Image 1 (tube, rainbow over the protein chains, first blue to last red):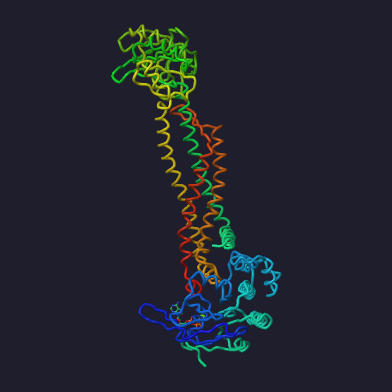
Image 2 (image 1 turned 30 degrees about the vertical axis):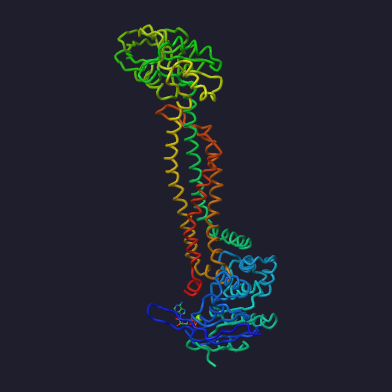
Length: 221
Length: 390
Ligand SMILES: Nc1ncnc2c1ncn2[C@@H]1O[C@H](COP(=O)(O)OP(=O)(O)OP(=O)(O)O)[C@@H](O)[C@H]1O
Ligand SMILES: [Mg+2]
């Protein structure tokens, strides 16, 4: 079953008088349960694509289907609600709320959605990313890899259909990078979590099911 | 917004404001003091006004006060009017006073004085003026001695037991012994004033059956309003003032002073509210990326707005609760530890009323919330993409 389908997706940024075509007619497809990497040169539109699919921004033209629903014309409050319940984000760095502990960070999206057992579930999630002993630590007391694992636990809190991640390991050393990759692999295999990961690292790309290549705002075959 | 969102907003707001403990303590302290300031200052204003009013009622006015008509200097036919008053059921007592002027000399000094002539027995039934003595003894019925106010005593260097010369407005002159020095706490009575028996003043001035004012004490001060007209009809007088009309100007002037002091207090409050606004604004600016991520996760714009309004609200609540406590105990303290005010030579005493807390709390909380609105609007407008990537 298709979880994402985009048709002729375009995004044009206007910087003063200059128009930048960040996305130039992207037709992409992701099946449910896939672990997909998005690769391509810098400026090729990878992040822009992720922002559109993650409903953080609206395209200039084209269509996006999430689980069969066209989302580009959704109203703002519906988009927010959809993001909360269906999409998990892991960005490159400084993802966490610095004044909240690890467990509170993970609880937060569940508090927003009104999950009845947010504390218990947050504990389970942190345990599943191997941070049971760190649940009461503040982000500043955690290593970069640990912080990213907390972010992943938080992204999974409301059982999203889609986990979107933009260069999640770019700031990590090899060992931490390996651990995060392992975590994604496991989530995908055991929980059938659909994951879309933007990366520059071919080694990481090779560990996914499939790579979508971007160039000049387009998918290259 | 859903309840779960409100809870989450409160949860986050709480964490956020205590993150920097020192800033938190300084700012709540500022609100606490600003709030307490309003309570205590108003407590003083009310206390002073209250004391002035009750002092006036005790020493210088009756429940009803009869004055001469518009164009007259004196009330005439006082004997007849007094007889009428005696026959009225609701009248408990009355005192006719005669006001005149003159000069008082002692050794090489002389000064203009107000002469208040009264019947000691009657006066004592209506006011406690004659008990307000600094030293010496008070006037008794048919006394030929006089009392002088403490300021006059000071200016003249005269004291109880001294003999002074009084020249009345008609030129009549007489030597009197000072029996006592008065201190009433009411400004008009404490300046250069001489108190003497009415019979004595009448005979020196050649007056008969005249008064400048008749103070009437009723069975209940609350009936003054309804008895005013009755009194005018029965006695055939045109100018009667109730005790309330007499003290109204004090209450009004106290109200004006309160307004002034409230403006001063408000400046302090606004200053502390601005610091709340600044701290929240700094939180917002420092957290652009975090706010962007919060929105990406699925926090609505109104959620973000609410977080920062709650932050202001928390500063407000803590400040108001602390301020109310400090204000309450402060006011209570100054009820029992009044200030000595050297110009009027009276005690400035605060007075606690529950409405003081109520007013200060609302104003203080309201201003603090207002201070949070601008940063909260700024936070809700933060663009996700720019915040996360910019
Ligand atoms: N907010 C923006 N305003 C203007 N131009 C933008 C904006 N965001 C992206 N762009 C431009 O759009 C193009 C695509 O950017 P995008 O960030 O999607 O690239 P990317 O593939 O993620 O690159 P990288 O690998 O460096 O992260 C770039 O030319 C970029 O400069
Ligand atoms: Mg990018």
